Image (tube, rainbow, N blue to C red):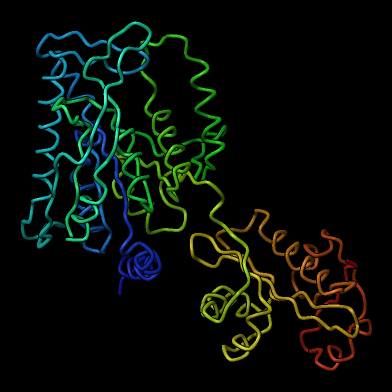
Length: 445
């Protein structure tokens, strides 16, 4: 195999946990009018088809802001904004209907492609749309009648679930219908957020022009807690004094993500519709391609189980090969796995440490402290150490000791003091490997 093939095989193998995790889950994808109009949209459609073929239940929510603006300009209809919303009078509503229908037809046509030698070959996708969204009028805001501008009143979630159960992709527009037969223009973010909450979706994915949220140094933030995103939106909104100025795309998307998280959606993702493969990279790689908004950090500390043996072996193998760690057989690890504490990131084990207590001596060995090479440089090693110290204290132990050949300074910096082999418990002294000649460090608890 050439290098490209090897790289592909390696990526495919590492994506398999995500394939298994996503199968049967419900994802709501918000496709703005800008996303549909972008030259990369055909690639997004191919990726949507791939998700569908992998068993992901998909609800697409379409917007059409730029298409509406183009129709208004063509029809010479004045566009009015009030409280950052488009005032939808009768003339505007006609343009909204035309633009929305055009975008809907474009999406359905793209998902119907099945030409040989294309990613859509043999896809056989059925797209279902209809009057799933019931709307109500926004009404009069500060003396301005918003006319046919509305908001979501309810969603026929059971009907949508039935379509998903039948293997269909559901397409929702930003148009809503009232029991009185009226039609309302809704914010696409409002529809997408309500759909994700009411369908109890596993993910809400928002396509924007940018990759996500940047930090102060201009680097992409791969993860953002909902409370931080909420503060960012509040700071932005407080800086706006003109109600006729539309909110930025990023502020709308962050606001939608926060609302979805508060409504019980586990994770929301902000990705770029301009970046080819952003959807797949976000869903099937560890670090993704955009910004994930979530209630709490998706890295967690937990106790290991026998199901984690393979993951721990894979994690520690490079350090066993270079001599940093003593080799452990699978059988040995299976017998000792309950002694391990893990750091798990999005279902993947990226760190571990073990505690071996010697109760009579009121001491314990800290062993096998490992953090995946892709995640070093942070505080994960300290998190593992604190967790192990807490366990030792709960057992009534008075100190920790560690044997190391290459990482002495890391332990010294964290309060460990070098000592002699004679200070180890007798049982450990008997097992001491003279060939490795490890240094011994002790830390009082």
